[in-house]
Amino acid sequence: MTDATKDIKQALKDGKLVIGTRETVKLLKQGGISAVIVPTNVPAGIRKDLERYAGLGASELRTFEGDSVTLAQVCGKPFKILALGIKK
Picture (tube, rainbow, N blue to C red):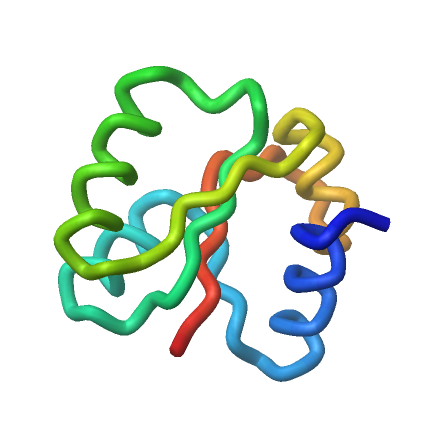
């Protein structure tokens, strides 16, 4: 299990996981996210936006070693996930 997978599972257990690009960006703007995790197949435009907001909020942007479907499976969700946020 990779570090990102461990962090995701722990955040899910602690109730600190934010799923989805819109919600992640919203909390990034408010400074409530410590780390953003994106899959390897995230579109360039979304990644660029997340990098910008993560930089402004001093949050870490990490890449999950897998695609959006695999990321969803780790979270136990039946839909693709392009961004996850871990709350502070």
